[in-house]
Image 1: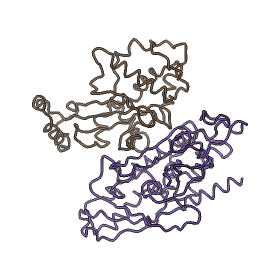
Image 2: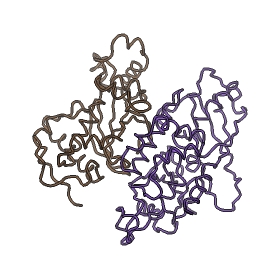
Image 3: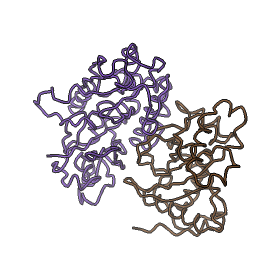
Image 4: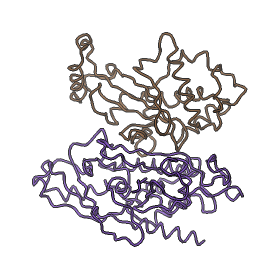
Length: 235
Length: 312
């Protein structure tokens, strides 16, 4: 249940200012860190980094591909996953303990930053096999990261689909990203009638953008307290 | 009207700008090591390097140690630095070549020309460059994304580019690839607000100087919403947009924009003191209104990419 608060939280909805975005990220981070037991659906880390053009919310996640890989896949592409898995094991002192687990793991790094052009949060992400593998290609990304129900829709738009590969705006390295050009319209449709706080905005954004690339926000930390978020301080 | 004519003249010059390139095959990939003939071409500054790859693959065909490489395996480097292919070659030159910007009357020949690049067909640097595909879709997609972003800044919505017909949308890319200014103008006029109507924000990105002797020179880019008009009074405090023609507004110039984004590098709004803005190989006057700079001198994707060059 979300009761519209009496004070407007956002100055330019459906857009966010850098200040509002930073506020939303801090709120989000606090909630995740305070929750007991620490939730995060298997996120291996979450942190906020200040960069030249503003803050970046960074979330790391390991994806177990055991459920997805079938024998056929292993026959098709035996090299990359297995080899990098083995390489990872060689350097890993705990490898013996975990040796029963033979499925290759995908490491996903999600970076959420405010697009200076679209003025909405934008999701960039990279995938690697284990810690030492190189970046994976588009097909592998779609295969393991995009849930079945979003695939058709995402692959059907734009020149090469709704997820493009481009250069990370801060690091200049190749990264996938979800097109932010429709985000503002979508936020308007979903929440145009509400008086959103920055934190609530970001939660809705996660539902809109995150789910389609397996970035799911744990429900618990946010279940009760959506209306208790403090206002953005005026400077 | 006069402004309009001079803006078109500038645009024509920008589109006619060429850069002599000398492209060598990476010695490690050549049967004759560094004795392979180089490929020479005068190439439009607005063009993108991958468009050369089919010709280069054919030209170096007999020299390649690995005969199985495809043209879309090709990538370029300058002095060991892989070049980001989604930037036009003129921008890459302004960023990396180290040449002084041209000014009126200077000799166009210089020690930096032809610009000497290396093409590689093996060992794609996955950590640094996005891979290409044989159909050019990745490059087309990167271009269109950039066009969309510029359009969104100019209009405040993405409706312009969304409403562009599929034909015109691919036509825009073809016009830029073919350096065909009339076709480009026809399509970009659908996207641009008419001259009487100002942009909402100016699509402009500022590239900071590369630190000398850095091992991995990653580019630092600054971008922030820049309205075309600003409050004349209390300049320092306001970057808020002002209404065109209202008595308290004045055009946002290259100088006011740089000063507001990078006050340390540009302490003055009128004079370059420590650094100067370079675009298409020339210094942009600090007094130039940035909307006019974009209307006349944008790259094919609608952006102005300014390279900041330290003085002295």
